[in-house]
Amino acid sequence: MIRSRDLCSGYGKLRVLFNVNMEAEPNKITVVVGPNGAGKTTLLNSISGLATIHSGRVYFGYRNITGLPPHKISRLGISYVPQMGNVFANLSVEENLRVAGYALDQKKLADRLELVFGMFPVLKDFRHRRAGTLSGGERRMLAIGMGLMKEPKVMLLDEITTDLAPIFVKKVLEKVVELRDELKISVILVEQHAVRALQIADKAYLLVSGTIRYEGDPQELLNHREFAKLYLGVS
Ligand SMILES: Nc1ncnc2c1ncn2[C@@H]1O[C@H](COP(=O)(O)OP(=O)(O)O)[C@@H](O)[C@H]1O
Ligand SMILES: [Mg+2]
Image (cartoon, rainbow, N blue to C red; front, side, top):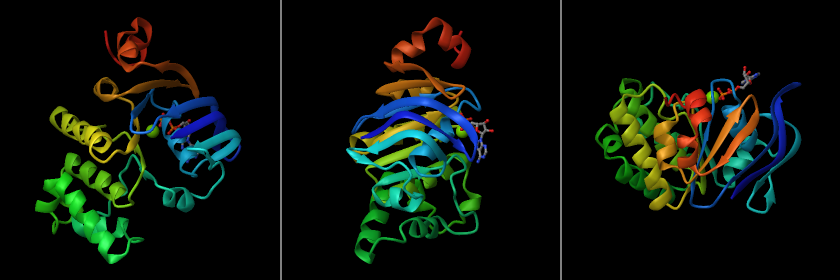
């Protein structure tokens, strides 16, 4: 679905990623873990057209999307939920969702709102509340809902569980599983606090200092003596 080939990218002249080869298969959850500053966000920025590509390629299916501008990549069906969520605190929950779905016609907008409210009943209950008054977990739900308004085939989720209480981590990750199983969306999920995320993953990557250090079975990474201790906080 999404593939990078020998990807070297960063910001202007700054090099952050080095020869990254990753593949996110259709209808799977691909989790990328790694320490702070490893380049996880830069990988998502490179896929969505927000980073500087120095060399290598990014493919969406068979289509080479390297160097396309962000709005074109988004329109192809790749929806990016950035780390800070990009929620408008002064707008209501429903207004935020409508803004995210601005490109849809009235009928599609209504259908999508219904789908998002069906998946996140809490957003329906709070539809008239200012987004700024939501809890951290609810705000992450809203950010995912906003991503869903774009009718994506692929969702790129950046640290959507960071700083959440364990109960909300669990709830948010359950929604990620629903994205895969019920909406047939392919997910690339990036997480620094990774154990829970790896438990729902179909495939795992470990990114350290801009290079892939591990690729494969998530459970194997969780059981890996050295990596689990060094990078996952597992003793
Ligand atoms: N917009 C930016 N402009 C310049 N450098 C950046 C930018 N965003 C991140 N960086 C740098 O890129 C490196 C990797 O950062 P990032 O991809 O955010 O890592 P991670 O998401 O794994 O914590 C860091 O050294 C960071 O300072
Ligand atoms: Mg990051």
